[in-house]
Image (tube, rainbow, N blue to C red; front, side, top):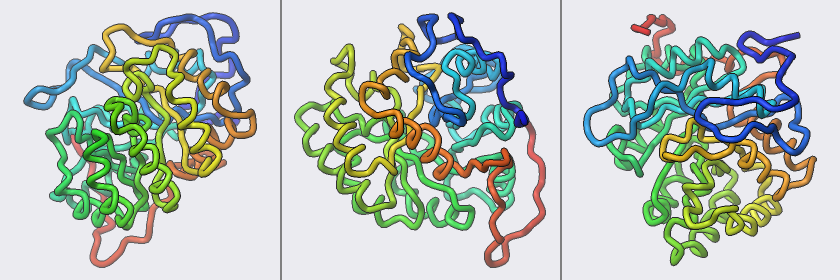
Length: 319
């Protein structure tokens, strides 16, 4: 049975192009059914970018992304709100509607978000909120606890992109939040080499708490001075040995920080260098399904029982 929004069964087995990605070949290993790209973005140049010095990008559409999915044999994805649009989630909502039940979303909100706004996001497939403290502007660390309290009734998580020093200073607050926490981009572990060992030890401690996950995405951000990302090898193998159940993987397509686009097949092939076949299945399928609330029948996230005096009425918003 094909899920609404899923790829057609004739995904390319030979060579095929995908926008905003170099190379033509697919993965060098057999990607398991139900595999999920847990970090990708969409861009629509007709939508207004947030004010200020934000990262911008040309059109990166659902149709563009589906070409990458066919090339990589990826069935599911998590659409992450880029900092470029601030707290205006309309591009994300349109993308979730087009991608259907094979996608989940991570939005950007602040403590002023209303129950109705959160209900709309939840019904669309949003399962988390992002704090980007690197391309800062829409969110700040001061909002963490207030936003966590807002999203807790929905079963969402907090996703964090932070400089290593900020991650270290926030670690205790993050592990104390009442919701799961997902750390982006290998925690940018090798961006500041003098801090790499401390960040590694911190990750082991945080993942060991049972409340924190790490996203293996954008190795070019985490290891900017390593062409083959070999300086991530020991980290991933160590984390996989200790807490494989807290690792997920993502492309970071369309690689908005990169003027020269990477080869996404090379990025996914890193998994075969780091992990066994069974471990790859855990990361790409099992962990992603648990964290992002994918169900075997292809349905959306289960709606929570509304706490307190939350209204059940859900209004539509301008899409």
